[in-house]
Amino acid sequence: MPHPNDGDLQAWIDGELDGEPEAAARIRRHLESCAECLTRIGDLRRESEWFSRAILALDDGVATPADPGPIPLAAVRRSERRWWRRSGGVLARAAGLILVVAGAAAAIVPGSPVRTWLGALMADAPVPASVVDEAAPRAGDPAGAPTVGPAVVGVAPEDGRVEVSLRNFGRDSNVHVRLTEAGRATVRVEEAGEGPRFVTAPGRLEVIGTVGEIWVDLPRSAREAAVTVDGETAVRVMEGQIRILRPVLDSLREDVVFRIGD
Amino acid sequence: MARQRRTPGESAFDEPTDPERAFRMRPEDFQAVYRELYPSLIRYVHRFTGDADASADVVQDAFLRLLEHDLPRDEARPWIFVVATNLARDGVRTRDRRRRLLAAGGEQPMPVGSPHEDLERAERIEQVRRALATLSDRDRQMLLMREEGFRYREIAGAVGVRPTSVGALVARALKRFSEAYVAPGEQNAPPE
Image (cartoon, rainbow over all chains, first blue to last red; front, side, top):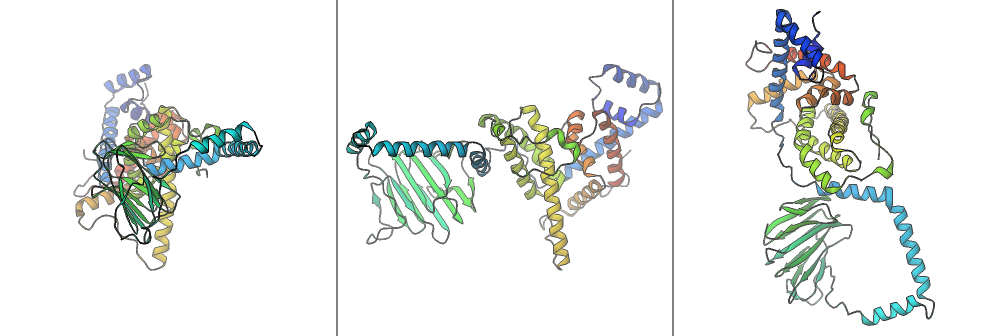
């Protein structure tokens, strides 16, 4: 048999001839009787090991964790928005517009079932007394005075910064955080019992609760935004990029969710 | 989405552009693929670029593109390595241009690495980088993909050669690297 070339020998070393038993056997037989090729095999193996060893030096400074954690949320969100714009957005928005126009047209016809249904709905609807949205402490309120009762409160960034501070929530409380295009941070709490207390100050919103489900919207436009839990930073947003510093329950929904006690 | 610049041989992994196919990978599948591929991909890109920050950006962008494509898991791995390689190449070109501009303006780019970096380690890294730079982009990609456990047919698909040619190209590239690389404190490469 003529000497196998370097490519065949390299493929043999790399186990690439395992699927070709005849070719592999041919090389093996040749190596049994050819000192020259045996030497060449040794050279190829040394060069291969030399490369593998040398290349390890480049791994300094890069973390290759066995578990990289959840997918970077900002990337997923960008992708979702791109997908929405590209594939379904136009059709869905067109369908929504048609429904709104048709509904409005039906509602203005006196005696129409839609008009009757809307009237009944509005008569029965409770007044949303628990929903308050304010950008700063109300005039006349002393700064930092707690507001008891409202379930939704907003605060605008101060000098590009806004902080939402959650205090005294039970360990089982879930916090849902998302970035929005709104110009302010808002917090909505669904809580059994008397409801949370909110303390607002310029660029800062403190929520004192017991146990509940908490939704925090942070403004993407803020230079810096943060959510703290009992004084510790749990979420940080810088220049539109969100970082979750707590174990995440779910990052593939509209919002990212973590538990207070985790 | 802007298409990546590609060499002719990379057409085997060309990205599908049909919007109907976009974003079909289920989130739980994507999460599993992410966890599986991330360590290997970040190591590969870092070895390819030598820039930890740029590598993280490249890897994130590559996964973002994967998210938008409907690929079986076994195809996702070589595909994302090719996409990351292209992104890394484009990034390297941008950084090279920036360095040239800085040099032309009389400014020096910031040195890479911390001031406390061990001298011998830094020298070793520099030697490896210099030896890698003697290889073509294609050969560098082949050797680094091989280090990540890719089979010859996957490497062939990524760089656009026949699978039967990979052995010879790998052997030649390894030889060239060995001749170019002399580790600090060692006389000959590779050691006998």
